[in-house]
Image (cartoon, rainbow, N blue to C red; front, side, top):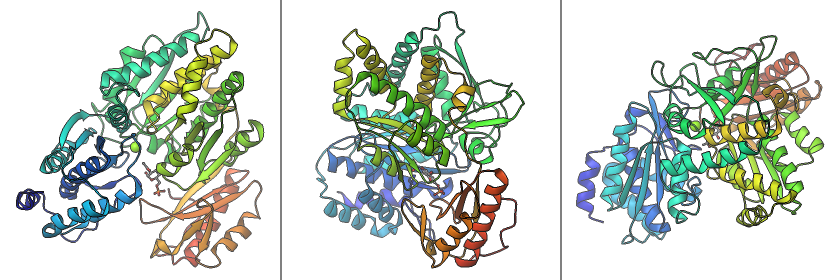
Length: 543
Ligand code: 16G
Ligand code: MG
C-alpha cells in the first residue's frame, strides 16, 4: 500500500466533520451529500474483501425506497449474498475513521481479517437512477483503483441484478452469464418453459400493470419486456419520465399506506404490482368488484410460492427438507395457513433480509419473505442436482421435476428480486389457472395496524424470540400480554427500528377496530414504560 498516494487520494474524499456513519441492515444510507468519503472507502473495502476471499465483490450504489435526495451503498459477498457481519463492522469503522487515520484503519482490517494485500482484487459496481448515483459510483471506483483493484462497472442495474452478476462471476458461469443479456435470457427462458406448460389454450396472454417507483426497475423491465412478451404483457407506470423516485409510489408506499400508488389507473380486478426504488421488493394488488383496494404482500407471495413448490415436491416424491421463513410482521393468518392447512414448517427470524436468507439456507427448499415484499426461494445444491436429474425423465415425476427445475432458474437465489418474483408469480398463476382474486382468497389476512412511538432512547427496548417479546424495560412485556389477552385472535409486539429513531408497534386482532385499539394501547404502554417524548400517542394512527 502506497500510504502517501492513498493520503492524497483520500484528501479528495474528505470525511465531513461531526457525523457518525453506520453500516446498517441495508448498508450505509443517508443524504447523498454526506456520502462521498463513504463511497471512496467502500471502494477500498471492497478491494480488500476481494483480496481476502479471492473472489469478485459487488458494490451497489442505492438507497432503495428512501427519498430521491438520499443515497447509500451496500457490498455484495462472493455468492451474491449480503456482506458478512464481521465486515459490516470493518465498514463502520472505516467510514468513521478520521482522514489522517485512514491508512491505519485499512492496515488494521488487513491484519484482523488476514487479507493478502498482494492478491488481485475484482470489484463489480452497479448503481440506481438517483441523480447523485453516478458521482458517488465514481468515488467508489477511485477507492477500488487506489488499491490496484480491477473494476467492472455495470452502470445502471437493479440491486438483485448486481447480486446475480457477482454470483455468476464467482461460479465460473454455472449460475448464469455475468451480463444483463445473460440475466434476461436465464429468466425469460425459464419463464417461457413454464408458461408453455400452462396449457390453457385459447386463453388471452396474462397482463400486469407495473408501478416502477420512477426508478431503475422501469429501465430494466423495459429491456426485459421483449424477452417475456410472448407469455406476459407488462404495462409500465411511474417509469421515471415524469415523477420523482419513490414519491407517492413504489412498493414501500403501497405497503405502508395500504393504498394504490399515484400515476397508475386501476380497473376492478386488474392485476397490478409495485416495485421499490432498487427493484428488490414487490407487492401485488387489485381493486375488487366493489372497488375496495386489496393488497397481496410478501406473506401472500410466500404462501402462493411455497404451496406450489410443496405440491411439486410431493409429486416428485423425494424427501427434501422444506421451510418457510418469516418475521414477526408476517400476518398471523398466513403463518396459520402454512402450518395448519399446508403443513409446511414455518420459522421466524429477526427483521432484516440477511437473517431470513441465512435461515432459509438450512433447507433443501427454503422460501423466505418479509411482509414488505422482499423475498425469494433458495435451493440446496443437492436438491438442484437431483431435481435437474429427475427432470430428464418423461413420466409424471419428471414433469413435476421439470417445472421445479425451471422455477429454480427463475428464482434469483442471491436476493429478493422484484423482476424475478413477478415472473415466478405470473408463472404460478398461469400454471394453476388462478386469478389474482383466487390467489387472494387462499386465506384472509387478519386486520392489523403498525404505529410508531418516539422515545428518548430506543435502545432501552431489547427483545428476544425473534423480536416477538420485549425483555426490557421491565414490565413492558407483562403490560403487552395483559392488553393482548383482552382481544380475540390478537398478537402484538414492539421493537426499536433499525432505520429510524422510533419504536415500532405491531398489533393484529379479529377486527380492524380491535387491531387499532390494541396498537394504541400498546403504544401508550411503550410511551409510559420506555421514556416516550413529545405528545402522548393519540387514538388513530401514524405510520
Ligand atoms: C431494511 C431491511 C429490511 C427491513 C427494514 C426494517 C435489508 C436489505 N433491508 O430496509 O429487510 O424490513 O430495514 O426497517 O435488510 P425497520 O428496522 O426500520 O423496521
Ligand atoms: Mg429495496
